[in-house]
Image (cartoon, rainbow, N blue to C red; front, side, top):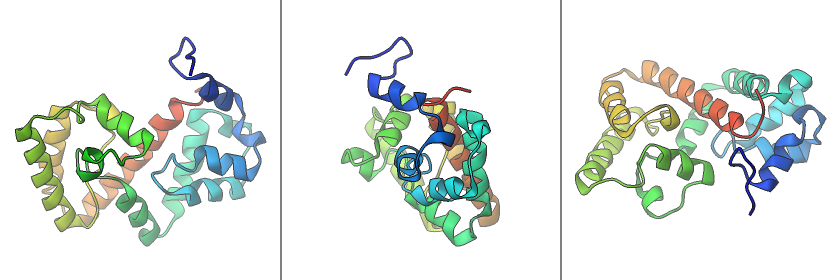
Length: 185
């Protein structure tokens, strides 16, 4: 694949040039259905709600998708949270993350942990999921390995309602960052 000056492959540049408000539903859901991890229904609902040229930017489309996520039931939002992989967890070790998650985790160095760091992540992941019923979610592109671990340690002390809200905010931030990689602002 050839890359343009902004680091995107030719295919990505072509796809990014398509305006979301002008896309057919199937193409829109195919292109943006993975913005919220394994939750194409969010993109389908955003499309059904109607898209205007305001949603042709990362900011606009992020707002449209976030609105559908926020309007979803608690059970549906929990499903989105549960669809996220553990940080530096078994799926990463088995190379079974989505392409976006793989790139995001690598950006914070989570693909190159020492044995001690991996053990710490494994312990925190287990305790967190046991306490909250969903994996720890943080926009890793905004963080370093050290800040992720500090947030993990801090947030594990939250009550479930506080942490559910924090995880939902992080899901929206991840969505925004993913859109910024493929759409203009």
